[in-house]
Length: 234
Image (cartoon, rainbow, N blue to C red; front, side):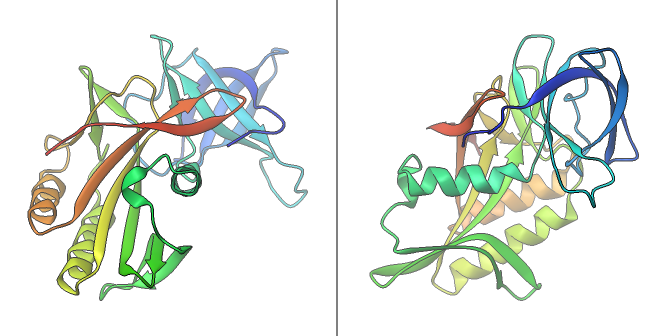
């Protein structure tokens, strides 16, 4: 995924009210930008560190700038915009990077499914095999060298696991795909210390046939793409 034009940069001051972030631009001016991340952003907020943002020319937007990436004190890059995870996954399926999800004729996004009124992130279909329901999650929490998901209690994430298990029961293929948007994360694990109910449900989902995959992203202010499989500790 090429970013054209490439992102502009500044320094982080603070994130607040969930969707707002103050930064200092390269010219010294302080501005407020949009934060496209509804999570806790645990271990992603480093005041004074470098951040990158995109700029929209839509005159209807109150905040034209959108926070895209952040740099950790160790120099790792974090993808802040969780909305890019699905696009990264779709691109990696189409270009063959995610080898486990090849051989399908059609890819659709945001398709209604399940008994709890959900929308699957990616639905892969083919006349030659069962439908494949792919739920995409962005993983950015790094603690003591280990990547974790989620970074806060997620009842929505628990619902998605139940929906995936339901698809397996109906004879379909169901996949939970962690898109790792943190260059310092080299393996993913359920954050039992944050959301024990999610960790328990993930284990149950895996034991009933839900596949769990993770792929790491290579990121820069110029481009981002999923490049390799990442171990999942279950």
